[in-house]
Image (cartoon, rainbow, N blue to C red; front, side):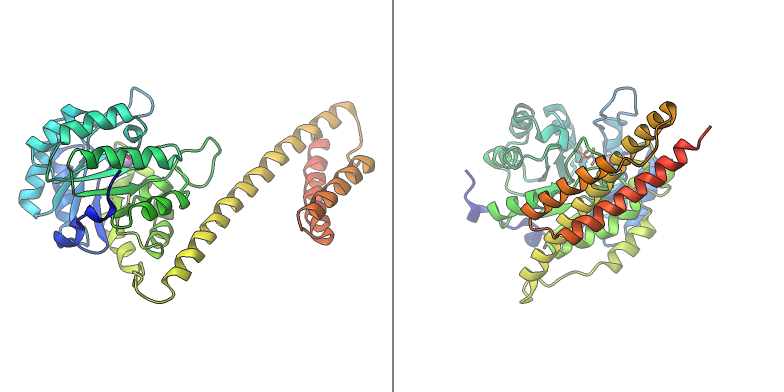
Length: 361
Ligand code: PEP
Ligand code: MN
């Protein structure tokens, strides 16, 4: 196990900005693209240029990264702009090449963190490196896997370690590409208070319009930095187009964010409040999703009734549902008045739907 006190806070030691901003394209596409974006980022809050060289794609047949040639482009970008560079490594060969081309920050992607075998191989390839190593959360909401990956890297005598929160997969569709599950990174932070925690709102949201809000929540929870996918023409990006922002938008996002003072007396209050609010947001999304699914079934029943020439309102069935729900509400401290209003509204909406369907040709 890691001795918590052994962490040297490399963020402070290296005099990197607070919050740390890592920005750049999802993927390196061409030398001109990498250099163009790097020059645009040079005078922003970003101090590290990210670009995926090898891209983990869920399904085969998509663009899988430019490979080794892109490492040379990152090196040129560093020479021309002074930005540090960052890329994902997913096997020992990637590590060897990234170190050879002097990449400053190597990150382990979400699809690698899930595999202790892969993490161990990467750890051995990184042994004793002075480079910064950031570990993304695993795709599944499993704190132990994430902690285990941190421990494997730490045991390889890497001391500039940090973690990146990029959200977790869920089968259920929500408004996020990967749901934040804020409790998991917070639990990780409680285990390792000195470990820098970076938020990747791009992969959490999958949608550039939601990046600001997630970033503000991260700051309210005392995160140490961001990794934000940035592209000069996001809609033309070869991967993750919908979630990338332009360098201009990145500047706007950063200037509108409120950095909270960690030491203000109500910091704890704000963190707790925001954590609770983010839980409510997730539940509200689920609630809407369930209502939508319920309505699909109501529509199907409408079709059945139409085809069999049966009337919409079946009072007996409706009364049974309502009484059952009132009883359940009672058992769960929800008032009869609330449950009745809520289900009457759902019932009315269902009747409206079925009325439309029954009168369809
Ligand atoms: C990425 O950063 O482009 C990436 C592939 O991220 P993740 O591992 O979080 O999916
Ligand atoms: Mn990406």
